[in-house]
Length: 241
Image 1 (cartoon, rainbow, N blue to C red):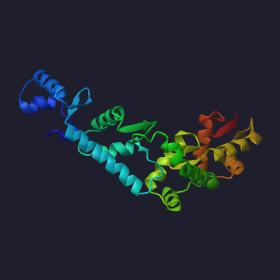
Image 2: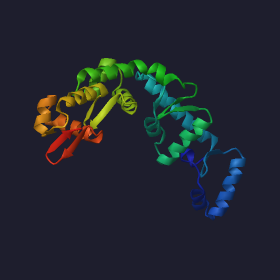
Image 3: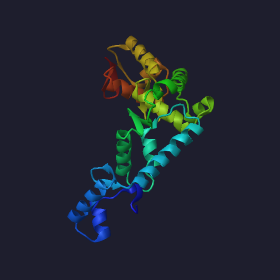
Image 4: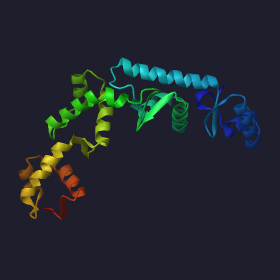
């Protein structure tokens, strides 16, 4: 009970009781037989601790719903941050795995939600995600700000950021640099313009004139093209492949 959601490990119990770890491990085995919750192979917790964790997660999901989250699911990282206050990250991870196995939670890719909401991400978040994607498509290389999108959608900024992450993973959006995310169609349209210069060695200034972009945007785009082998760099020149 004293260990709470952090759980009881053999080293902790050995130090707390002043016994060897072998003796502590044997005592933990008896606790497990008596109904203690096996959070993971090395961590036991009381039933009251499990209830406290479930209440903490329920409050987390309820708060997201009250804030206008478009999906019953939440990014796993957010759930871990809400869950893991006061104990190590790996224990929070173990709780998520345990509660998923116990059918308290449902996991889908990098999302988690209350059990029974397996289809929620596709059904509930699709409208918001498509509106965010369209905003990026219309913005071209001028990435819209998350807080502006949140205001337009009447949602929380963290909700928008979570959906942007989902769109990045699905390939709808492309990260060109830490500070620049654009729609895939925007990148593809720029790539199509390279055809007129195929086989020609061009300087950065030539690409700037060809694509009509500032250097700040152009450099990460060219590096993206290098990675995709659409261009090949040679000193100050790049050849369109």
